[in-house]
Amino acid sequence: MRRYSLLAVAVALGVLVRGVAYAAERTGFQTYSVLSESMAPSYRSGDLVVTQRRSPVDYRVGEALVYRSAVQSAPYILHRLVNREYQNGTPIFSMRGDAVTQGDPLITAGAIVGAARLRVPYGGFVLQVLASRLALILRVLSLSGCIIYLFFIMRHEARR
Image: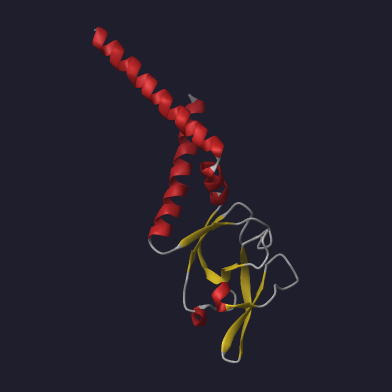
């Protein structure tokens, strides 16, 4: 019985996290999985972050922002805005992770995807599992099992 309870909790957690991600994306927000510990302890590897895009002048020093990276291995980075200055009237942003001492290369407003609005602990891990091939196989097997189970229930009922 305990096994079914753990399975029910796991399924409910997966549905909840996927629901948050789906709702966020349908209302103009975007979701990202945190891939490193550079923002620890505020954001941990495996967390899901929901971001909201705003005007560049509305981003405040101290906010955690997701931006496009020039590095291929990490297309998006979540770091804190530490300074904003203007060069020839164009805003330039200085970013740095909470757990690192060195700042990132300067970025322009066009690189910013949005400000972090919501953190779902371990939500990124859950979404990665749901998107994996293993999850697809498990869903197909579960659906097949349900169909077979219903078939035998109906067959049993028809014999009565």
